[in-house]
Length: 351
Image (tube, rainbow, N blue to C red):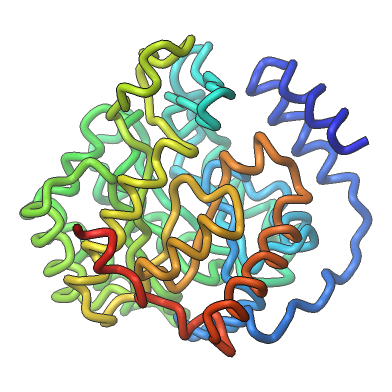
């Protein structure tokens, strides 16, 4: 039945399928998720994660199904990207599947209902686990950096952690905030805003996989200078591997996610691990669609991992299967806890 349901969803237009998936998740009755194997537990960012698998931002933009995702077995989830004001995003069509490659291209453009709507959802259904808030800027904002400060202040009482998203390729000019001078100013203002609040959730920075190593050097140095808690590596890519050239939709504008992103994003993760020297918590994302790929991210330097596109193609049963496989991989390598594997093979990704 699950295979049939998944096939039916994949036959629908992507955004329609996504909306139906959200509606289905809302109908799930509350039940306490099954207790995870203690070997998968991760304590970091001052939080106790029951397992290292998280739903990446983009799936639950408006905080509609955060608790349902935790019930499915995720160790954490991340809402957003949320912007101060509601905005429709880019014109449709704007999401394209490449099933033969296990990939998706999107140019959504931070479509969402804005801060007030997401806050109302979180208050109506208080998080029953770890829920991060991914914050961004409105496309037409006169001061995009200020939009991030507004987000920090608005969600401080509800967020388990914040993700500062300056790496989406679908809002023109947004990635300019990854530049050294712009980022230095933004992070200083974010930390000043957080310091003035009674609640001070951890702050992580989400970067693009398309950075040069020189740009990565500067970003890691700034993250350490401003005492960020961590980084998420990486967002979608604007690059198109030659292996996709023959596929329909491969040349659509937007960010590429899924299996083709595994190698470049994991190399960027390993490069970040090398530079951070364990002074930052790292979340690996991009191409995670199995226990083996999640484990590869962890061995490359990730403390935690996130996925989204893998769920599109494999459905919700993927999470339980990944956790089973992670346990097998830990036993194979002689580790008593998932944290022991972090960074053990990062050098292999730098060769």
